[in-house]
Amino acid sequence: MSDMPAALEAANLHVRAGDHPAVRGVSAAFAAGQFTAVIGPNGAGKSTLLRALLGLTAIHAGEVRVDGRPLTTLTRAERARDLAFLAQGEPLPDSARVRDVVALGRGAGAWRWGLIPTRPWTQEDEDAVKTALERTDTRQFAGRRVSELSGGERQRVGLARALVAGPRYLLLDEPTNHLDLAYALELVRHLRCEVAGGLGVVAVLHDLNLAARADRIVLLHRGQVLAAGAPDTVLTPAHLHAAYGVRTRVVHDADRLLVIPED
Ligand SMILES: Nc1ncnc2c1ncn2[C@@H]1O[C@H](COP(=O)(O)OP(=O)(O)OP(=O)(O)O)[C@@H](O)[C@H]1O
Image 1 (spheres, rainbow, N blue to C red):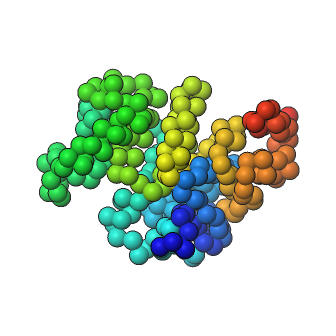
Image 2: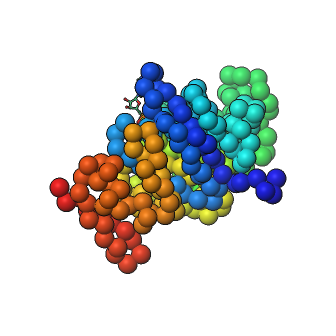
């Protein structure tokens, strides 16, 4: 176990979306305990890559590995435990109460609701729900219905549901879309706390100044990795021009990096 890389890895991955070669030979490691932003222009293959990392789409060639193990050798239960996904504007059942929505993320929740006879609800499940509510600042409205929440609060409930099973890696597709600046920063702050606890976060982001706060960035262009590494090595005017066709100025302000479009 010790020499296994603690990472979710894409190894020379090729994925088709319909007939289109959306991901073409991508190799990248998304480490546990790190926040990796995946950026790139519309159609670059970001969502397709995320789906492949989650095992949600057929892989044409190459491999996905979870801590050194091929994803295809993990059982469904292992996949569900190790990998969590939060989509943009995550659809949550409007009439359900927040606590119950989060409980569904335990799997056992389905039993609790009488939907699937999987396993009984345990004290461990109860504790995990409590912890997830606390860590995402959603405990104060645990008894409210989803329909009574703002967009930012809903997103935090989605995050709680994604975290409640204790995943190793959390993958997010444009999680800050529809969020105002304060909520977007708050979400990144919550994710940072989880990363400090060892979670590997892989987030598709369009906002380059939010991406600049990640530990690493993978820049995709036409289904390939154009650059990968620390934000200051990826967010360069040359890379951004090659990917987006836009001239930018990159400013280092104290310990922050700011991308300013010049076109
Ligand atoms: N079902 C499909 N059939 C054909 N082509 C598809 C299909 N799904 C996606 N594509 C194409 O694959 C490419 C990659 O799509 P993908 O959604 O992964 O890009 P993306 O980087 O996430 O884009 P965006 O930033 O716009 O969400 C795009 O050119 C897209 O048009």
